[in-house]
Amino acid sequence: MKELNRQTAQAAKYPTKVIQFGEGNFLRAFVDWIIWNTNKATDFNAGVVVVQPIDRGMVDMLNSQDGLYHVNLQGIDKGQPVDSIEMIDVINGGINPYTQNEEFMALAEDPEIRFVISNTTEAGIAFDPSCRLDDKPASSYPGKLTQLLYHRYEHFKGDMTKGFIILPCELIFLNGKELKKCIHQYIELWNLGEGFKTWFEQACGVYCTLVDRIVPGYPKDTIDQIHKRIGFKDNLVVKGEIFHLWVIEAPESVAAEFPADKAGLNVLFVPSEAPYHERKVTLLNGPHTVLSPVGYLSGLDTVKECVEDPEVGRFVRKVMYGELLETLNLPRPELEAFADSVVERFVNPYVKHFVTSIMLNSFPKYKTRDLPGLKTYLERKGELPKGLVLGLAAIITYYKGGKRGDVEIVPDDDAAIINLLKELWAGGDIRKVAEGVLAADFIWGEDLNAIEGLTDLVTADLELIQKEGMRAAVKTVIE
Image (tube, rainbow, N blue to C red; front, side, top):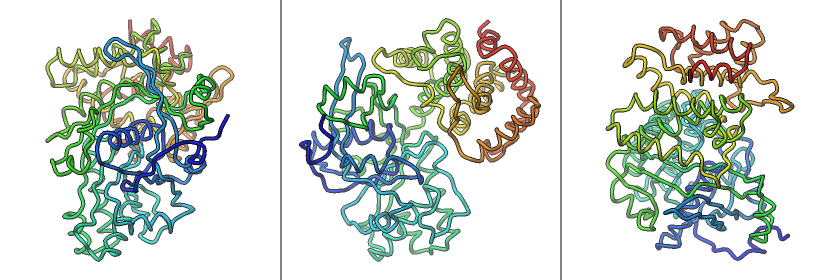
């Protein structure tokens, strides 16, 4: 079996026009796949340089394959099964700014680079006041981006034609505005001056976007067959569903520079991404976030298994149709049709989406995807949504660690969150666990104990899970 690289495989070489913060499965199966298709269908002719946003990641593996990898898309399209696999060749290389800071900052000096794209998870767009301009690099993503922007401003002496078009893909409502706010905070904190501030405002654009594609990631269960099919050993194969949607709230001038909507792709440039965002995050990502810990602790491993399970499946539908759907303002038939399509995507027979991959950074995800619905439901119905509350209790339980059968449970989140849960669970008082998690201002931005009845219900769910197991708790919700 041949190793995959640019000596063994025929691959195009494109001039670098895009800086991409993030090398994970989603960006490679979505953004880089879209750029690849746009290159084929238009004269975009763009290559990507990947920046690893945290000190641990996959840039070394990406570079060992010269940026090459395959995307395997599976699903039903117009009633016909589709199982495509294509080699993506748009990534020119990767940089770890923690070990290659000079190379990272040198990207600011490339006059051909025009776009910055990111997906650093919901926790990534955050202002960290401990970051300094002379850090190598700043720890936060907005800090790194501000360092890069300021170096570009100085290198090109404020040239207004050398700004960046910045497209964040993090699943935060108004992600562009949040990122822009963080950059302004660094401009003030680091005293970068009015000249740079004006250049950033006038030469750069930071736009809100919404992304949608289910990406299970590395297909470990079928990788041998895929290797035989492609004739290469590819350690970065990524599997995704056929469906894709990228909504970009930007003017026509941006669409002219980034003609993905002219490449036969489901890319929309719109005046407002708000209605698309609310519907998608609430009815797809919201259920994902709670079904994953509930399903996993019920002995299930994939989204499909969760939705098809007699008990957990009823839980998922109750959360979707009976709770989250009730918090939205679009016409009910439209919402139900969208929810139906989401269920179909969840049970796609070709996609094995492991719930453990969804549980990365579960607390920030719950904050953005489910907490707004919990509050709205309480406001409209006068009672707490039991499914969403159980989902929160399931996350808290998952973060306790321990084992599921013979498998070690290893939560993956910010160290401060992991340490808080470890400390709370070590105390042995379940109510104090609930109170401590709900009171964590650094997670929620508020004290959730103030929500009437929430502490009691989370405590009761935690106690039931500990005594009788997750499925007993699920039954209290569905019955």
